[in-house]
Image 1: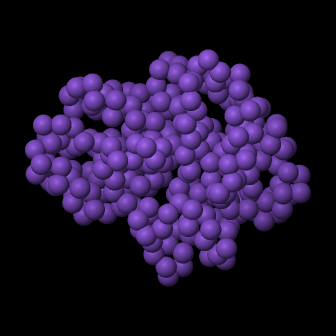
Image 2: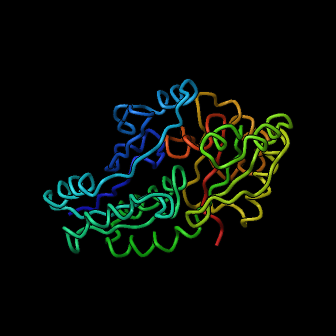
Length: 281
């Protein structure tokens, strides 16, 4: 018997780890067009459509049936499942997983990751490392439920346009922001998005990110750290790494990165950068 880690498709893993997890896919809709996230539309295709389309995309939670199908396959193979979902405050996907898990009492454990995208990814990586060390399902569940409180995502958004399109910002504020080159800095804590401040220009924005990391007590480099970006252009991410090199040199052998997918991408658009880490506790 082994322990399989199940995720939903909003978890933005580095490509080399994707095959180590089971994934349940959400859907993305552009008007009447429906796509299966990560299956019938890639991240690259999503951002191309996001830029070109006049229609604001929407995302739909994964169904209990989709989770049940994955869970059943694992259980019938003689294994156990630990499912980590994006924050329940952001989606009903966690509830769908719980409904499905009820069909397999004692065999499936569902954890609200209280995060999303690269935040859920580092939590999933940590869970996988525990499973590979031979930890039991109960031990992994307890540890992940505790350590998820230490996961922090801090992000610098390039444009306010997509927040405006999603109805989360007035047109006047978005227009003023574009004129002033204002870049919002946000964090995700306990499944809730918080506006930390607004930086004028990328340099000030990168400095803001560094300060927020320091304010959190620093990075626990014994656990996974992951950088993310939205869209097709990695330039802003490269600039951030250069501006904050002193944070990473001698502490992280290699800064890993991945493209952030549709759920966050829908609301913040291309050109954003983010860092997810476990804070020192």
